[in-house]
Amino acid sequence: MRIYFYKYLILLTLVSCQTPSIELFNGKDLKGWINYGGGKFYVAEECIVGEATTGLPNTFLHTREKYQNFELEFDVKLDTVLNSGVQIRSNMYEKDTETIRWGGRFDKNGDKLIINKKRKGGTFWGYQIEIDPTSRAWSGAIYEEAGRGFLHTPGANETVKSAFKPLEWNHFKVRVKDNHLQSWVNGVMVGNIYDDLTATGYIALQLHGIGKNTSKANKKILWKNMVLKKL
Image 1: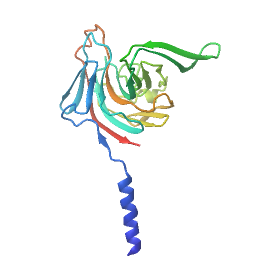
Image 2: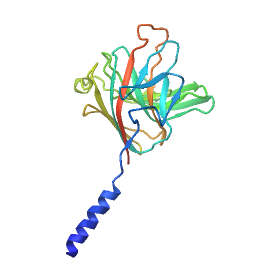
Image 3: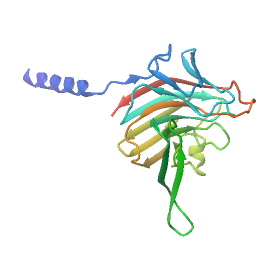
Image 4: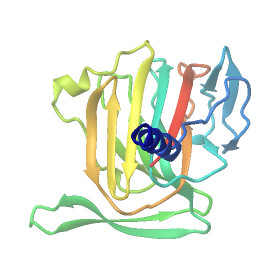
């Protein structure tokens, strides 16, 4: 009897130690989210919708809370003329900032290629998981918005590049643990890098600016089933 009691106690402890999943989107409204930049975000048919609008720069719908180590899963579908991404560990520059960073590349002399750029206060920046339905097919690549640019790309890997299905619902998984960043598209691993620039920040949905391109106006991005598990 005592053996069964201890087995039950161990099982109960394991269950209680499991981190519960957090639904970032309730399927009804944008509670828990903040519109940063004035983009057109709304809820329709239990999805978060981002609708492209001319005359706006990149805009973001970000969580009220910041997150550090986690697994994030979501489904997304968008028009093939658009480009988007989901920000992780992202923040805003509080004032005009000059960023000096190594871009992970070398110049022709073998020296580190340093990226030096000036950013305006209020600029939203940070790691981004690329959503690219175009023929370039870089969905799942890891990018730094308003920073160093692409930290990783699929290159010529056709298996990875064909993981994303244009005009269909696609399932993304992102895992960040300390300095290790990973991404999957429909079960296929795309990104797997180590970078320690940012330890915590917001999760955000990007609505990419389209300039004056009226052919992209009113095209939509849809997100649903956004679930996060802290690590």
